[in-house]
Each structure stands twice: as structure tokens, then as C-alpha cells.
Amino acid sequence: MDSLKEGVFACGLALSPRCITETIATAAAAAQRSLRILSQAMLPSGKIVAGVRHSLCSLCERCIEACPYGARITDPNQGRILVNPAMCQGCGECATVCPNSASVLEGYREVQVLNMVDAALTG
Image 1 (spheres, rainbow, N blue to C red):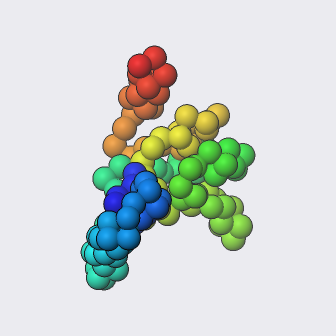
Image 2: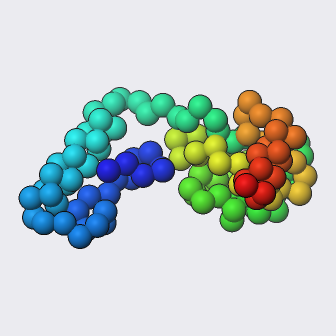
């Protein structure tokens, strides 16, 4: 039922062709999973989230375009890129496209992020 992104669930035909009984069972399971999230007063963010070093950020917005989860926006009032920690999945895509190293993964050094990208591309 669960997908890679927290809070997105699949059931029925989205999983595979199924009979009505199996479709109803997967729909009930997806509904119960969603109740686990909806019943909480506060949602914890992921362990690894992205951040922005505002002093280095040139507002090129490459990180916004690269984010597959839509976790980044430009705040026109502050003139800054903001990260929504509830939506950020810590994938590091923003850190790889930033020309100024302003986008960072909290808890990781830039060398570690680049090593993970290299390992993914070669493996």
C-alpha cells in the first residue's frame, strides 16, 4: 500500500488487476494507513531534510525545479528559498544542482552527498 513518499498510498487497480474482494481489502488497508497520519496532531519530518545557506544562495531557483517532492518555494517577502520539512524527503537532488553549494542536506557534508550520487550512477 505504501509508496516511497510518506502519505501516498495505492490500492486496487493501481497495484495490479484484482478481483473485487482484493480491491476492497487493499482500499481498506490504504484507508487505515492514511488514518495513522490523519490522527496525529503533528507530523514528524524525515530524519534527513534539506536546508539552505542563505548567504551563499543566488536565488537561481535550480533547486526548486529539481525537487521531485515540491518541498521548496521562493519567499518573495524575504527574498529567500524556503524548505518545507514535512514535504522534503532528503533525496539530495537540490544539493546536486546548486552551483553555489547553498543547498545542503542537514547532517551530511557535501563530499558525502557527491559520493552517494557517484555510487548511484556507477552501481
